[in-house]
Length: 120
Ligand SMILES: [Zn+2]
Image (cartoon, rainbow, N blue to C red; front, side, top):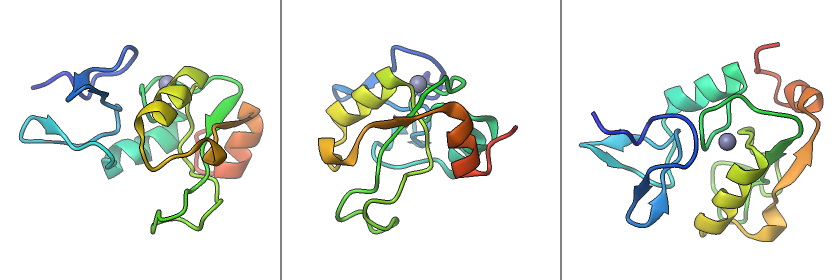
């Protein structure tokens, strides 16, 4: 069992990159740039940060879907919330994200209303 999926900061490092709590681990190796669906569902249902796995705080930071991300409409809110520090970490290490994609922040209550699936 590796520690890649543990919660909290600082994140474990793999190939010089911080490994998000939601990254799937296959054969003991994290798959960066992918999400484990179960972890994402857990993050949305429990209101957890997608990077560190800890409960989201007010305000919630988020990104908008970048150009070339086939799974979202460009400019749409990506429904995984982050802490400010985790959002900065994401921007620094995710090559598909540009500052134009965020992070933006909204109050926690509004985030819950917007994302809709979070536990209330
Ligand atoms: Zn976080």
